[in-house]
Image (cartoon, rainbow, N blue to C red; front, side, top):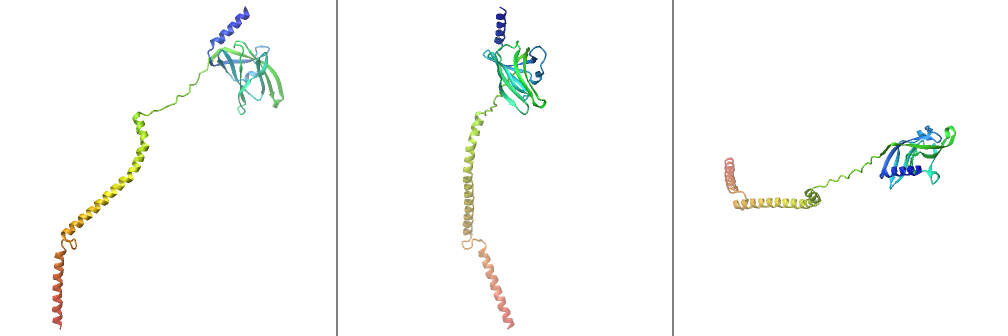
Length: 238
């Protein structure tokens, strides 16, 4: 009855955890007693707990990754290497993930191999992960930022869509307009010249100058007077 009650309690705890990601604190203890193991400082806190369809997986980051050359967790009555999710040689860390067969109320037994070449240290250890169930909480899921779509108004969209065409039309129309202006200007100049010629012709068909006839008369009279003066002067001298 006691074993049945314990199993029922474990099943009830697993059932209360909905699918999602959780964080949980823990302490690494020695295999024989509840004293903290020296390996406690080698592991990052808290751990991550992934729950999916009643199954649980634990993800833990190890610091001083080069020292912990092996990390084994329970697997089918024995121990096997935990799957490595990622590693960072610069930070000297690695992250492992593995199935959690028991509930968090039970310590997780695991085995590590520690090698520190600089001090010629090489040992195997059995350790226990003691989880703090009170620290269990669901991780905050960062929502993906919504795509900011600025939809232009119908009129603006239509105007924007027609801009290239309008520019092309303007580019095509511009030379035509210039040609028309040039033609109009040339036509106006020609018309003005024609009008001037017509007016000049109306005034004096010969020279186009209305005062040319009087001028010729004055010049002719002056020439006659000058010629008479010269003739008179010669006669007096002779």
